[in-house]
Length: 547
Image 1 (cartoon, rainbow, N blue to C red):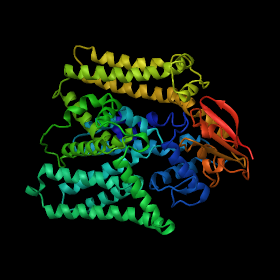
Image 2 (cartoon, helix red, strand yellow):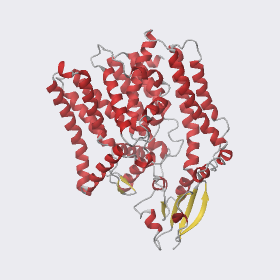
Image 3 (cartoon, one colour):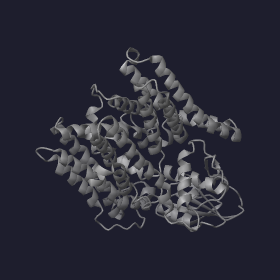
Image 4 (spheres, rainbow, N blue to C red):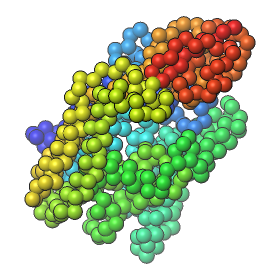
């Protein structure tokens, strides 16, 4: 604790390293997103073209480049794809997000300390650390933690400008941050930022107390800077590939908003459940503050900004048709803010734990703990469980030779025990809640380091082993009938090749050609006259082209 008091920033750097980094390389990268981004970074290294985001050596217009640039730097730092690599490729691909997670802890601690108190800053950082999904994503190779950080900082900078309208430098920094957010994932950064400003202004009735023209000028300046940063990169891409790439990008963004893309159409309450279960345990006590109207004497009404940000993100992504877990991840930062607010009041005696919180924590904690327990049990008894599975592909996956020690299910039981230890008390104290949060961090560390790699062993280890076994060989390897990026990354493909369907239908190929399908592939693929079955293994079919 002396380090916490004397060097709080160093403390959070060390804690972030301990929590986010140990198991970065424990499991293979997961299809689609993790492998997608790492493969785009690898192709930048192969081609030497760091301007263009590519997949299969073709322009990839869905995502801008900033996160891939960070992965490129990480690959170069650790010597990945050379003979001098000193960590695994998976570790290097996820390393940027671990740093981003640590940066997030430092930033929210700093903001909380500045505008509330040092104790509040520590509680905010600890809440972010203890919530389940922020923990998972900070140890992943997914874009969203960086994207969320840029948006949050952009909103914070504008909040500073709102409080000090004579200082345009805050508006400039807001524009830079949102521009970087747009270069991370696209125009939705500007949408979320602009919608937050608009709703905040209406809620606060800013025209009654603030120079409206000055605020509008600041917002316009920020928006222009953000758009210029984004437009500068896209202008270079358009000059290189033509307007077609921009049309594809716009069409993709519209499709995500209006259709359930890639099978990700979910009910309107989807993100409410995702946040409630995914941000356990802090979501239980943080949620009550989301509608609370409370005036503050802070220089910046941080509470109001956090409320507006949370609801803007939740409403927008509940209305769009495509719903994926990380789409509402921007809500994590305001949710952890309200957790810190409750915990600070709990510590000072201004808030008491009600029985309703124990009931909610018990119900949702048991559901989450049951899932953490069930997943290893399915793996341990995979052979027995497979007879009840109708899906031939999943049944084949469960036949993969994954080693289980037999005790992994106790991790989930440990979480259930932690929940029970908390909710069955007559009176839940502040120290008990802190212990609950500490235990949650430990549970997720164990689950990600021990169970998650075994899940990858069932879902994708078999084809990835096949791809790796052909690295450096002058062959084609393609997937047929399902979308995957794993064969590009793990085979370390060195240049473009025909699409799998096209290559399969050729009467002859210029090099040995291999095709991977799922066991439930259509018969027109499985019994193609140009293909010879090599083997069937763990739900996957492996073919060779016959000239």
